[in-house]
Amino acid sequence: MTGHIGLVGAGAMGGAIGARLATTGTALKVFDLDAQKVVDLVAKGATAAASASALAQGARAVILSLNAPHIVRAAVFGPNGIAAGAAPGLLIIDMSSIDPEATRALAAEAREMGLRWVDSPLSGGAPKAEIGQLTLMQGGAEADVREAQEILSHVASNQTHMGDVGTGQTTKILNQVLCGLGFMAVAEATALAEAAGVNVERIPAALKGGRADSALLQEYMPRFAARDYRRTGRIDNMVKDLDGARELARQTQITMPLTALAAEIHRLLTAAGLGGEDQAALMEFFRGPNKEKFQ
Image: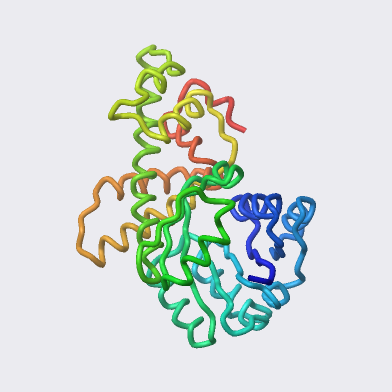
């Protein structure tokens, strides 16, 4: 199909997605309120757009990578938003992590304007986007999801159609429950290993292939031990996601005590000024001996 792909939102995650698309041959136009982020992607082969509306003109699809439902709404339906420049039938692929109810409302409004919508939240973070190995969980009409999957094939190695619009976001909530608890478990185990005098560097290899093994263990225990706080995600984004899980639990009358505890620990760290830091900064909760390494 002809037409370029648009990207609205070029932050840590959107920037990684955009860089991967641009460097693997996708005709990509980018808009972000932060002009420097656009410049960075233009250097990798993308084209800058003056507004979301201008970006949508002539586009085959527009990808969103934004932080909250009200920001998604403004980008799509606000002044100079995507809808103002879109031709009927434009496919919107929302890779933001927002709540399912808001997603369904946004998609319904888009349908009234002749636009198509696929929610395609992700797991794997910027590092996986950079090598084309994101995991995507998607909601929408079957034909629309197939088209989205073809467009995103350069950034994802695992794409699953979960059902109607909103089911991708629901699946992402489940992913974040597992990740939020998993980050805390690995951080806590790291702190205990340090206090007990175990060589933390050997633990991932020692547990590899066992029931305690996981991608989080293999990637993050070495980072926790080294106090490697390079930013590939944000603690305050996890607060948002875990709060979303708790709201879904309220609606479905499910008790989630461990999720509530993980959310509050992330909230404490955010209140302490660490909300913009990577999950690796969870080690600050344990006040480890290498705290001075924090930058």
